Every structure is written in structure tokens, then in C-alpha cells.
Amino acid sequence: MVIKLYNQILEAIKESETIIIHRHKNPDPDALGSQGGLSEIIKASFPTKNVLKAGGPVGDLGYLAEMDDIPNESYQEALVIVMDTANTPRISDERYSKGKILVKIDHHPNDDAYGDIVLVNTNASSSSEIIADFCFYHKEELKMTTKAAKLLYAGIVGDTGRFLYPATTPKTMRIVADLMEFSFKPDEINRKMTEMSRKVAQLSGYVLQNIDIHPSGVGIVVLTKAIMEQFGVTDSETSAIVSLPSALGEIVLWGIFVEQPDGHYRCRLRSKGPIINEVAKEHDGGGHPLASGANAKDLHEVNQIIQQLIQVAEQR
Ligand SMILES: [Mn+2]
Image (cartoon, rainbow, N blue to C red; front, top):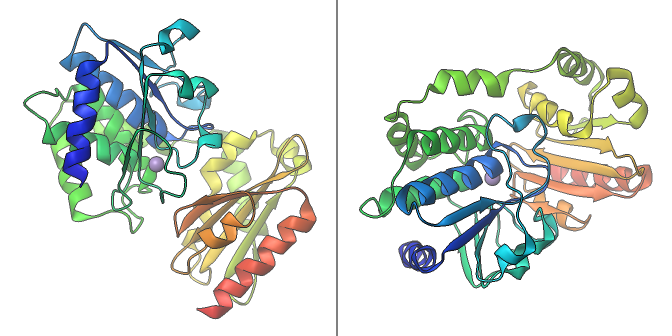
């Protein structure tokens, strides 16, 4: 199944002069790594093709990939490939639908199977792993480069939490080994990805001191606008604290609720075992069974989500 899709996608790439690669909003290293990695591979393999990266600001991840300025006309005959994005509202740059052919490549559950070609592999740790596998499978025609290997490595490290999460498989490690044969410096990437600003370090201290732990094993962190202001951090900087509660043995699953400028809460849900994406789906979200995102319009809805999480934890 996957091999057939690999062939179809390679054919679509060969037939297109312009290839525009999108990814999700608020990009993480896997979104940028898979987008940038695929872009580098296509450029190296087919130097005459026009390969462009679409999407909004990349925050403090500019060391991975920068976006291109893309005129509307470029979409007319373009092959559009969307990386790492489960559903269409999450795609960065709405022009994704303006191309000739649309391809979805992702590892999240395929609830929204948009696109003419849909390659979704939920067994892959990351979209970057899929792109590396795609490239190595077609190694006669697709060229892995040092820059692509570095980006894909960063994406895999990001989505596996440095190989800590259960999505890390023997295949993930084999692919990582092959990527490490290229001459980038993995330790440098690891350090960059672990690095935090002083204000995020201080916010981490706050989170560990103030996390609420329900007897069922649910960890709860609510970051209001006032707290964010106190630490001088933005929403995108809070991604650094999402995995912190995992270190506490008594926590089984947890929610991080971050108030947004318009007053709604962005919710990140994580679990060590019990399935939490069903809760996310009921609150304008979705994602992996053990790592999902949702949105709550106010604190009342945040409390509803917390009650649902407690139910999930108590049912296990
Ligand atoms: Mn991903």
C-alpha cells in the first residue's frame, strides 16, 4: 500500500515543474524538517524544478527552514504537497487548494483524508521518517543530501521527544542510522533543540511548582495571559514545557491549557497510555491517541475537558 503511494508520489513529482510544499500552522521541527527535507531532496534530484516552501512565520525555528515568497500564479500548474497536517484548517497558507494536484503526507490519524493522493502512515514516528523512507526507497531516483538528512533527523528527534516516545520503532532507529551517515552534526542539532531561553527555563520552574495533580493521575497546567506576561513568553514558547509533566511518576495523562490573546485556550493533551484524542475531538481538536490538541472557548470549557480527562484516567 505504502509502496504504491511512494510510486504515485514520485511520478507526480517527475511530471510537475513547480512543486509547492506546505505544512501546519505553528510549525514544530517535524513540520519544518519534513517540508525542508523533501524540498532539498527534490531540488537535488531534479535541479531544473521550481521547489517552494509555503507557510507563515516559523518562530524561533528559523535555523531549520525559511519560507519562500510565492506569487499566486505559481500555483496554477503546481503539485502541492502538504506535510504533517491532519486536517485542512491546520494547513498554513490557504492557497494549498489552488494547485493542480494535492498530496497529503502525514502520520496523524487520517480523520480528514484531503488530497488526490493520501499517504498516511500512523506507524511512522514522524512525517520526517516517512520522507526519509520514501527517499531511501527510491534511492535510484531521489538523492538524499546532508542538508536534507539534517532536517529529517531534526524532525524525528522532535516528534519522538529524542526517542523517548512509544512511536519510536526499530525502523525509526534504522532510518536515523542511515541519516547519521551524512556529515551533519547530530549533537549540534540536539543541543539547539534542547536549548531554552532563560524566561522559558523560569516558566518550566513555575510549571513544575504549580502543576495540579488529581488523584486519578491527571496533571493540569493552566497558563493564563497574566502568567504568560509575568514570564514574558508567547504561546509558541510554551511548547517547550509540554512534555515536562511526563517526568512525574504519579501522572498518567496531562493537559496544558494556554490562554490565547482572544481569550480562548489552546489545549495540549498528552498521555502515557489511556487514549485521549477522543476527548480532543469533542473540543475542536484531534491528533494522536497519546498526543492531541484541542481548543476551549473559555475556562468553563477547560474545566469540562479536565473532567473528561479525569474520567478517562479513572476508567483505565
Ligand atoms: Mn509530526
